[in-house]
Length: 304
Image 1 (tube, rainbow, N blue to C red):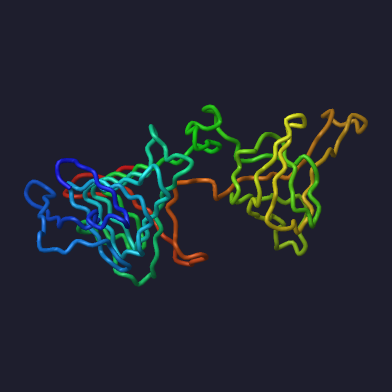
Image 2: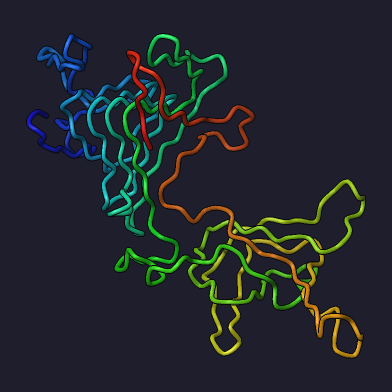
């Protein structure tokens, strides 16, 4: 699409093909060569896809499992849909945009890049001497990504009235083995269903080489009690170990402090961002990577 026009990549609009042009490097940099003999179609699994230097594509779907995706123009994630680019590697010479600091991805939308592959897959070579292995998001252009602030809603992209949302808190009551809820201090009602939480240990583990830290997924909306300043978190499984919360020293103990309270920490550690770059395979020993910036033609390029 020439002249800065935009187009939407949608399964319902096959004329909006990602691979709209071939790109070559000439004396004046990247130049587009339109190939009018190509029968345009939507990409399929295993395809190599190239966005030309003058292309501006708005992605509003989840792509097939592409081989390599090369972005010489602008690839912009829709702010109205849940989108995902799946590829072995993504090379960005132009601009990849998944929300901006000025306009974060709204809470009712999402954008992501999911990379897959094996260690012996073809190596990505962006420029001479810059070997980036594979299963990589390589950026010698610009990567811009900004998700919805934690706690924002579909109608309120600012979230939490512009204040930083809490990502951790202390238990207000001991969680015994078998418990499926946690009572924590403060208002954590913005922690989303599906979020991953970690529960810190407070006991000496048996055997000593192990740990009693545990992780869970939030199974239901968190409930905040303003009178108690306490939030009830609903877990997807039962707690396996005791996690303490309570007073261990009081005024009658004659200690330096009038009282001492100890409590396990609960932290939101995953599942809360709507802009994600990740490895596709669950539990893969060979993970994906992101490389931003490098030397091209004697100049330092690339930003995020």
